[in-house]
Structures are given as C-alpha cells and as structure tokens.
Image 1: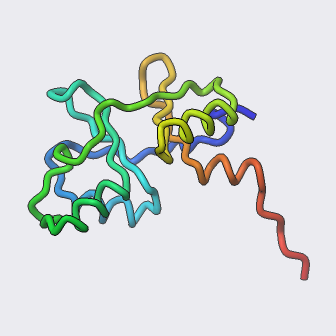
Image 2: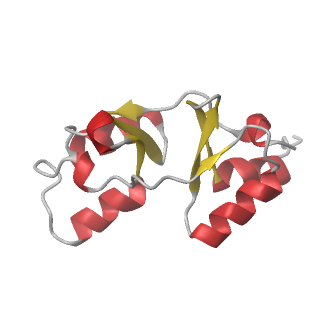
Length: 129
C-alpha cells in the first residue's frame, strides 16, 4: 500500500502569526494532530503539531501570546505519495515524529500520520450484532 492510499488530503493550513490557542482550536475542531504553516519568510512549508503546543504550554508559555512561527518545525521531512507505507513508517521511526507532509510535484498534497498507517495495516472491523 502507498502513502497516497493512507494520507489525509484535507489539510489544515495556518499562518505564522496565528497564536497557539488559535491553532489548537482549529486542530481540535477538525480533529487533526498537525497543521501546515505556510510562511514565505521562513522558507515555505512548516508543520505545527499537537506536541509543539503541549510543549509550549508545559513550559508555562501563554498560548494566547505565542505565535505559531516560534514553535513550527521548518526542517520538514517530506514524503512522496508513491512511497510505500513501510518507507513512511521507517522514516517516522528514524526521525522520531508522527506526521509526514506529502508533496506531489513540489506542492502539499496531504499529511500521513502514524495513525493513518495503523488504520491501513490493522483496519477496524465492523462489529457484528
């Protein structure tokens, strides 16, 4: 199975000036664990994850005052939609992260998460009543 078969194609995109609270609210309402941060001043595509928000709050920072750009990962590891899920899982395990931004033709096409991969490898079976 390929990354394109598992990835989420509807991706939350935010700007670098959003606060962490705004980002967390959007992520929560859309039930996603990561958002793309588009910041042309920082080199283009970054990613903000729920862990980034949690780490900031854990350090006592104010989520209403902290901009996303201060917590965004800008050295993003990208996946191709034609990667196998094994390649994606190996990359995540090696890098110690749970989300990969998927680029197709240099443009963001989706995000694949560990949860997406697990869903493909161990599909939930319908309960028989």
